[in-house]
Length: 439
Ligand code: UDX
Image (cartoon, rainbow, N blue to C red; front, side, top):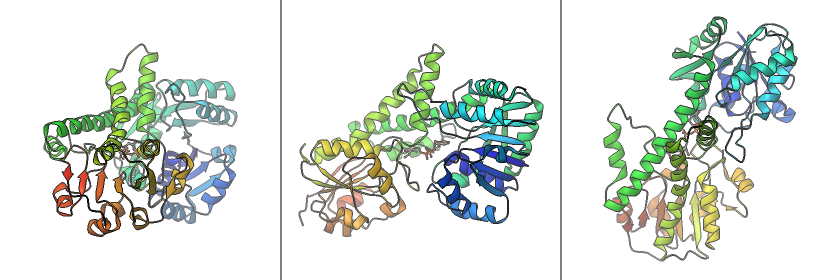
């Protein structure tokens, strides 16, 4: 099959590469010439484990192409995927300007029947809107629209796509359904077929539900702290119930990234426009905002409310491990809050430091964990990269001015930290008031 994918962000690029890897001829289109040149050489513009290798393999085997020319990409294509960004507007609504523009250009170049598929997360009703735009620009309706939302996670995007748990296909014709089913057959997955609006809704409902799980366990964690319970055990006990499941029950500093914050607020907006107040998801967002600051409160508590001039080693900046993505990373507001209190945060991240500097004013970064913690007055653990999880705590204790760690990801065992002589606070577990040791 021949596929054209427009937009080479996370979703577009990973989907395009995976479609080529299962045997299709894929052309990925982007307006950014420099990016296209890099990708032609097999170089991924985003940090995603395994992506470069898979790109190179499929380029070398002649199935994966890159171009800035949409007409060239659409030539002979069976399906054209729209995978451009839908960034949030000030009011939380998704901005559809890029989608509209691409739809118009697709219409202008549409000579023969194709299925035009939206992969970007778009408000319910966008399929219809895309259809109207294409029809107007093409002057005919020899095409079908479809929705095929994406469920990949950054950091495990290739694995998530190649082993997808389900494919959701929103269609309005049997022809489009057959084509998209054929395209997805090699993934050996469950295919959920629906109308276009329902497919669009599935994506929002799935993301909002996962975000709800996170805010729910974070609130349970906050209550655990008040009543002396341990949230990790609570989550374990809950998770064995198949109806609940153990995934996404890790309490922490709240969710960030390019999807959950954007999609929850877009869904609240979609509901509002339809005349419905989506109270649960509004609260999910509210709880998530507050959760980021809990970790700063805990640090203030350790220092009797005064962290002025304290050097704070902030370990992990990206919103989660295995990505350099800083979009809506909790670290941004946490570091700004530390700065407001007069502290001197020094950030370390295996790959996101450069991106972090672009979005956090006056951010000092270190090139290694060791450099960040040397003579620091406390560690704030924000992202559970393997490298950070494998921290040599005894060694770290010697490098620190004060053995204080506030662990936003519940990486370490409180009993172990107590034995190491640390003041150790985490999320929803007991705080260890170890002796402060000044080295
Ligand atoms: C998410 C969805 O999982 C994916 O299906 C969708 O297509 C895009 O959005 P992603 O944003 O890449 O993927 O990351 P994910 O692994 O879902 O984590 C999102 C955020 O939630 C991170 O900030 C993570 O730290 C946080 N999280 C996740 C928790 O705080 N606790 C958890 O138990 C799980």
